[in-house]
Amino acid sequence: MGILSDSDIKDHIKEGKLYIEPFLEKNLTPNGYDLTIEEIFIPELNEKVCEGVACVSAMRWFLVSTKEYIKLGGEITAQLWIRTSYARSGILSSFGKVDAGFEGNLTLSAFNASDHPVEIKVMDTFAQMIFERMESLPEKLYEERSGNYMGQKGVTLEKNDH
Image (cartoon, rainbow, N blue to C red; front, side, top):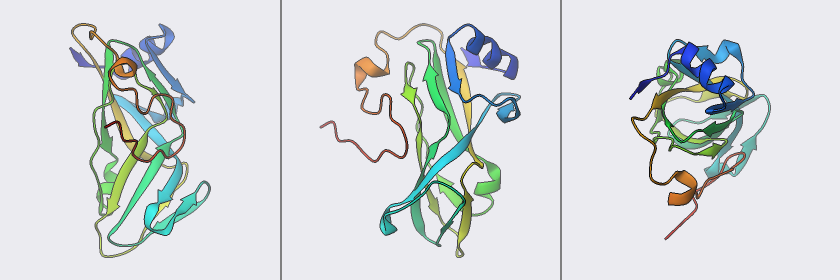
């Protein structure tokens, strides 16, 4: 088990064990890949922003979807971390682990905890994805366990599976 380096990520893409589309070399970091904002959704206002800038008021929840469509192979899982530039602006986010076998755009939940509006730019990088190689293949991949968000595109709100 271990974290994939930039060269490991490129190798895994070449070998078909990992898929990132579009893949931009400039988004590659020494130990991950920066994910780009495709869409911003502010539920309280029912406002969707797909170009330009969304101004998120203080103390307001919002969601972003990634431009990148991700496919994780059976031996790869991933962690998500908010970019520090957003954290330093007062944006808080709690991300889950991306399961082995997941495929789709990611929807990321965030909250402006500052006392002032924060501008969130479409096409800016918002989170870093850190890929981890598992020691063995899982018995069942994401799609077989729940697969609720398999193949999702754009901001996808909660899907109840119970």
